[in-house]
Image (tube, rainbow, N blue to C red):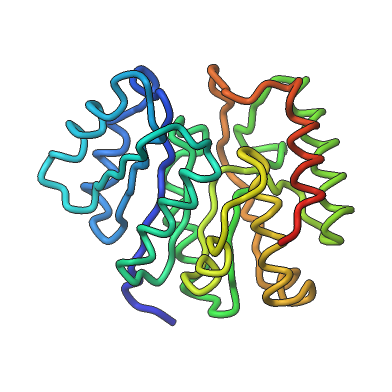
Length: 243
């Protein structure tokens, strides 16, 4: 069991100037100096880089930033962030949505699970609607999400409930496998993460060594950059992709 694991969480950002809750990120970083937050500006056309520069210039060494020269999509922003994060030889790396639909506090729970179970390759958030949890999204997106999840589960031959949650932490050795090459889809790259882990470790190992962690809170925020009209096409692309 690791006593003081080194953790880097990638936060992909694109045109987040007016949505980024800098106070939440700053407070979390101050309270958890052992966890680094790496913000990746995916070629934003607004003032995102300036906002990030101000945030990361707060005498908090665990707030870092990386700028991509042009917009490459969320998948590549996450991949480039993970590649950069792995250079510091962390124990765990991960990524988290910039809109904080998932609050930052569950990072601690994810890392705790990874630390206690050396067999785990990845912990991923699970937006399970249930009593006692604040998991809220528009009905249309919820029902389409369940359709997508069923298709993905059947395709992967894994009982995964929520492959698309933008809150994931991976063991460094597993992340190295995941980032070896660019993803086929800008949005459904989470499915490719599972496919690459299956190729490397086998379906049985992934089934027992990936933990879906039920989130206590996930609140859909306005301003999603993925249009439903393109979602099914993106999904078909990733289902046909090779790991």
